[in-house]
Length: 439
Image (cartoon, rainbow, N blue to C red; front, side, top):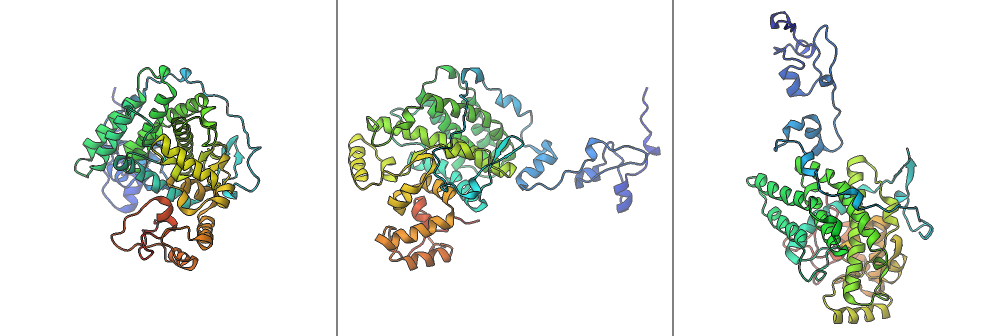
């Protein structure tokens, strides 16, 4: 028996009555209220879940998705895309015991000191530095596409590129050609490749090198999909975070000894390249999870994990492409005391012995994050005053003037590596790259 109230007896909703507008009287919410996303209440009715108004969100790119998931350009549920064949029990995550005894007091800035709230470790991050890091993350897929290397992917690590990285490289190429007209097709291919990676067969038999390649590939997909702005791709990338965390924990447990190799202790160039690639990939993975947690939730939940990790910040060592070159560069850098080994995010040795052009993107991002932009800018000026370290800068006053001017570049100058484009002048000192910390 149909007990629905006849439409002729219904009354307009309160919002339409107040606005003196015609009400379609659709239930549970009229079309006008749906369109304006406002509360819709009828006389003698109780509020339903559809009447709850959703507050304005801090991040506009999430607003439409939270209000109306039906706006997604693809139909269907997101979850089947993530029904990966990854057997979580096959990758036991080792217990992560706090180990902060070796962290030098005062080496971690106040904004990276964690607080315990509701049993969760929460860290605040400086917004300007975080935005700068995200900006650099977005450039790395293209950098890898054009140069064959990225700050965590060594150009000579693999003699034959693994299938997982081949797919990620193809995704970078497709993404670089994306336009508003072909966006649907481009993302459908990228999504299929990312899903294929997450569903990779025989994961239990992966070697550490296979696992490293898979994590590097997933990071590339995360950079593309988290920060593009496409709602569906962002949601899928967020849902893939547990897999990234799982694979990263597994790589850490499998490479505990290898990740302790330094240029002074590694038996060969290839063993050092593998060790440094693992260090940087693990650090990049956990750092990305923390940065995105801050973007999404307002706090970073990975501060302690990041602060226990180490890496080599020396650009020349990282860019070596052969055993002989590595031995030559290693001998020179060790002789000059510039290995720039950053143990547990202690940048003391780098600040004392390093120079502005010793580092590339990876080292700069971590140094700026841990020491702060202002501190690192002063450090660059002081180093330049002491020995003309920054290429093209004639004196500290000129460098300081460059920073005060906001680093605006002369038209046509291409941005070079992170260190010089952030702090230094290029060529003959007359031309400036764009300000790295642009909005």
